[in-house]
Length: 227
Length: 362
Image 1 (cartoon, one colour):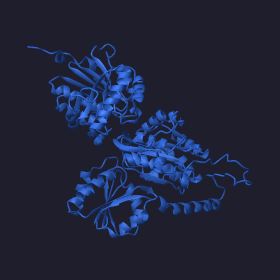
Image 2 (cartoon, rainbow over the protein chains, first blue to last red):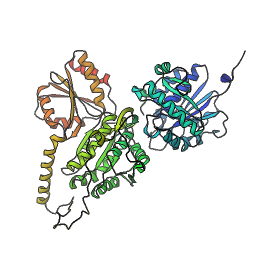
Image 3 (cartoon, rainbow over the protein chains, first blue to last red):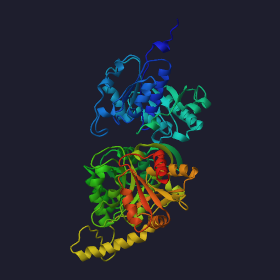
């Protein structure tokens, strides 16, 4: 039997980036994509900037869809958001779990620094830190803004084009994002690992976007969460 | 340094807090004073990230009392100044805002309501209506806009600066934690490119000329020696406010002409009310929609007309009757019956409003 590298190798990805860039949505959909391939997947809420709000309301649903979710339960916490936050002990050791590990990280530079709290993050050979970019957000709206922003984040191994306008998203905005993010990636010397697009728009675009990046179809889960 | 924060118009995807920061930039606000509190923090975050690019400033103070007083100070020095707060921060903010009412200072305050009393939740409520509209001691006079969408957060934050500087009353933009954190698309624009004139700020203190000779002395007081002095000043304020109220009051309404029941709501809850009324109308129910955009002054004339011809108001709010209290005062003597749909600190959905109306109308 032939076993491809793709199946045998472990996938470890951390999604970071600008506030409301779509980190959680991209992370959730990536975890589900891997789970559908029959892989064991751990989805880890490492957002200690705005903890518990993101994955908490959809945790049960994701568990039912075959993803192991590492996130606080509401009853285990208090004073969400401003009473100081405790890193969930299990999450600290997430990289020691078997299977793939998808990390949903808090926003901005402070969010990116959360990776330092993760045991083994500095030595993990499979870890890829991916910055999620939406060009419809003014602070990452142009090539130069994206380059400046990503340079300020610390370690970044690749970009994800997640350009959209919520319910008003069109193929055009996604393709425009593809071109802008691709140019920013070129200047940064980084790959664009994917363009995320709502499933129906992804079908229109095809397997690769206008800049030749692989298209990753997504389903929106985050409108069901609070923040 | 970039010339203008927004050139022309642009369709963008943002959280409500960011919208406020961009709107303040677009309105040519010059300085924000603030103290952090969830859920308004990103107003400060985005202001501090963007303002320096356009020569604007920020001062973090030691608490909300200080944030409010420094905002008042900024205004007295002739700067377009604003602050933002929530919950217990809004409580502290009331003392400086009361001084702003006494001195007629055009401060702009953005409030993102959270659960109360006290620290309660950082998430959401409409429980700061009473405090934001009536929080000052004495007969404080102010203007309060309640927004429902990101587009409105942008439009009314810009408008708040103009209203404040035109009429010289403290002006509030009342949002909530859901609006603060929610993501949706909107068009941001340069108001002047749309023909909106931005009323310039001018200093209260330090004007040229000799006081009493070249110009009246600048005497801005929040303290009076005798009752008569205070009485006289307040009479003038009341007259100004009464004259201004019909010019400033705003509302949104539809399907009220033949309605037996009108759903009255404000802010983010009006989105659910709007959806519910449309759904109920399609199903043949004689229902209408009314939403005050200004909670102070209320659109009293329109409310009373409606209260005189409609059998029932269903008052839907994420508070235990704070909007209802304002409505009852405005519609005093009108035959309309006011039915409560109060969910303090909790969101209200279209489905819930539909179910409640069906329960009432059978």
